[in-house]
Every structure is written in structure tokens, then in C-alpha cells.
Length: 563
Ligand code: ATP
Ligand code: MG
Image (tube, rainbow, N blue to C red; front, side, top):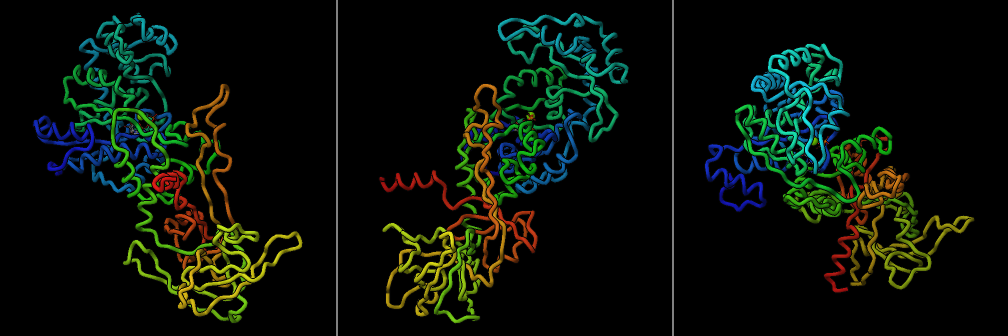
């Protein structure tokens, strides 16, 4: 229990107050209630970290509950993926895995109870008619002509709805609340609809299905949830949540709303993410550009970085949009500590060390992680023919270019000082090779005579290198708000055509041939990378998880320097 520390947000404050006052006998019971109609995204991670985090912090319990009330859109595939993602994030709901569909029998009985109490009725209005009767925000609605049906007639019709006597959409069961309520959710909301579709768990047992609002609070009640934490759009539903529980006279949890996560350059709508998948705008739910948990995982995100991010952004009631850079910075902070360093050349340019003996090679020591001494060191081979990064060489270099050009000396990381002596070009004038000399006295990267060089380059030995494909990613959308579009356009018009750039023929240090999907590294000077699930021993495939530093951090740094 964390009784000593100060709650960090209003939800935790409320939970702490409830423990102090003994409101729930000191119990804390939360739940995360995904609808299995898509994969989880980073917004869900915020909700999971909040719901499950609070239960952990206050010595309570948390449930995973699938809110599976809509058989038309739900699938077992999503259930499995959701469980995998939550486990990966580091949470364990033990045996507390529940399904709203397991409560269908109880919900049906409760609906009958409300009919008996004169608080629910069977309505024959179709969707359009119901909308017409609903009124507007400023005008009261009109009562359904079927609102005054007798209890007996309602019981009979509802039983026959259940028995499958009526076609889909022809009747509903509605709560008798108040057609004049300023809160539209209270204008005789639908509790049950007729929907014949095979449910992923209940099969064809039910042709009537309860609506979300009639299911959610009751499920919370059955599970004896204390704090039912949800996002702000349910604030207007809370009176209905309370109405059902009061009308039924059953255990009554407290609903609490918080602001959902929005991130720049991406979107959190499951419906639209599904469209991207179905329209093949991305390779799947786990495309490394997707904001889904499985996409972030494939991209190389760590669960720790996602949890740290969720902690950092905090919890409020104000809807806002968080800069994607905040998520990326949380990732870098974590990877900096844990990712081992490797040398990898993404755009190779050949270098021949003319004074290095042909056919020979040697092993040089390289540190695995300067942030973590326990990561140890490894050796990397050095030989006469190397690759360096193409943009580390310039023919007509400006004065401030500290990398390689003819006549200049640089350090090769962990290796030697080299000096470029000659440029070889093809018939079109493209640089295809550099001739260099090395100074054998500088082994390890330091000159015994104290001579300094400004540039340190990464490199790999050509004969020993592993060839790989590397995928570079940029934001999925060009616009910080993908939904900010011109008349007649959709978010698709904001898709970034350059969000994926595939590099082939990249040259990696040989130790990387051992890497398996999910392994993460820092390629020195190039960023953080991880092995993709498409990777094979023949063709390793790496994703760039994130560059080393983003534009935002650069700006901060310049500000600090007072530039
Ligand atoms: P929809 O209901 O439109 O399919 P949803 O994103 O609300 O989409 P759910 O499966 O109902 O999907 O969400 C499960 C839980 O996650 C809910 O409690 C919801 O409030 C929460 N949640 C969803 N999106 C976000 C978000 N962007 N930030 C924080 N919490 C979220
Ligand atoms: Mg929802």
C-alpha cells in the first residue's frame, strides 16, 4: 500500500479519500473493459496503466473484462490480441478474466425486473422514428406511442423477442426514464435490440443483445467494482449508469471520468485504424507505424517506456493532445539505459586502407553500453576493406565539416585514425570508393602523440559484415491532426507518403547476425533499431525504432545554450 505518498492525480486522490473514509470497506477494485472489436492502442495503455496501476498501488485487485455486447463487430482474434498486449505491458489479471456476455442471463432477468416495475417497455419504433421522437438538445422529445403498454404485454413481447419471433431491428426494449430530460441519454434509452448474429462466445443462443449502457454498470456491479474509471465522453452517460443501478437496487460502483489520450500525427479511433488495415494503407494492425500496442512493440518500444510515458503525462479531466515527441523521448530514455551499442552502416561507401596488409584482420574491443558497465564488451573485426556511411564523406567539405574528406584525418570508433588520400569515381562521377591510410600507433582510437581529430565515424569490416534491410519510419500522417482536412477530404489525404523508407544493402557488424526478432540495439550515431518479425537468417530486417535525438530535443538544447 502507498498510504504514505501523496496521490498524483484526482483519481488517485479520490481513491485515497475513499480508503480513508472507509467508503468501500477499504477495498479497491478496478477493471479495464475493452470491446473486442479491434487491437489496443497507446490510448488504451493509458487507461490500463491508470485502472491497473491504481489497484496495484492501493493493494486492490483489477479485472480484465471484455465488453462484448456487439456480436456484429467482435472477434476472438481481438480477444487474444488484447490479452497478449496487456500481458506484454506487464500486468497480470490472474483468474479475473470476465466477459459481459457471461452476464447475458442475469441482464435478461434484470430487464424483466424493470419491466415488472413499470420501468421498461417494448417499443415498435424503428431507428428513424426513434430519432424523430428523440427531440433536440433544446427541445423535449415525444413519448413513444408504445410507452404505456401494460406490464403483461411487455413481458410477453420481450419473451417473444428473445425467442426470435421478430425480425432484426423491428422492436427494442427501452427504459422508461424521461423524454424531456435535458440529458439526451435519459430519453428512454434502448436497453435491448434484436440482432441475429453469431457471437464469438455465446454463439447463436441470443438474438437479442443488451446495449452498452445497460451492460456496463451492471457488469461493474456484478464484479463489485469500486471505482469504474472511464473516459470523459461517458460523463453524460453517468446519470444513466446511476439510474439503472438505482432502479435495480443493486451494488452501485462509482463512475469516474478522465481525459483520453490524443497524440499528434496519429489517431486513436479503432474504427479508422481498422480502415487503415482493411484498405491496406498499412501492412496490418502491427505495422510499426501504427499507434497500436502490437505496432509499437514491433517498432521496438519497450513496455517500460510506455508505462513511463503514461505515468509522465498524468491524468486530468481536460481533453488535450500530447506531442508524439513526449512518447519518443520516454522511449529514448529507456533504450539509452538498456540497448547495447553496435556499429552499422546504413548507406555504405567502401574504404580501402592501403597500408593495411591484404588478407589480414584483427579483433578490436568495443563497449556494449557506456550507460551500463554490466553489459560488458565485445570484439569487432577490422581489416583492409571497410564500409563507412556515405554522408560521412564530402568532397568539397566546408570548414565545419569534421568528418572525412581528402587530406583529412578522422577516428574510426574503437579502431584507428585514418586519413583519406584519394577518391575513386565511376564514369558518371559518383564517388564509389575512398583510398585511405591508417596510423597503426592509434589502435583503440587514441594517438600516443596527443594529436586530436574532431570526427569519429562508425564503420564495419566489409569481409565480415552482415548485409541487412533496414526500415526507416516517419509519422504516419503529415498533419499533427490527421482529421484536420479540407472540405471533401478525409484523414486519408493526410497520410504521409514517406512514412516508410526501406534501405537494402545495409552493412552491420557481424555480431548482429545472432540477433532475433524483438532484440533492440543502438546503432551508434544512427538511432535505436530492433529486429523485425520479417527477419530471417538470410536477410536480417531491422526497424528503426527512433532516431537518437529528435528535432524538439535539438530546439531545447539550443535554447539552453542561449542560441
Ligand atoms: P470504441 O468504443 O469507439 O470502439 P474505444 O477506444 O472506446 O472505442 P474500448 O474498447 O471501449 O474502445 O476501450 C476500452 C477502454 O479504454 C475504455 O474504458 C475507454 O474509455 C478506454 N480508452 C479508449 N481510448 C482511450 C484513449 N485514447 N485514452 C484513454 N483511454 C481510452
Ligand atoms: Mg468504448
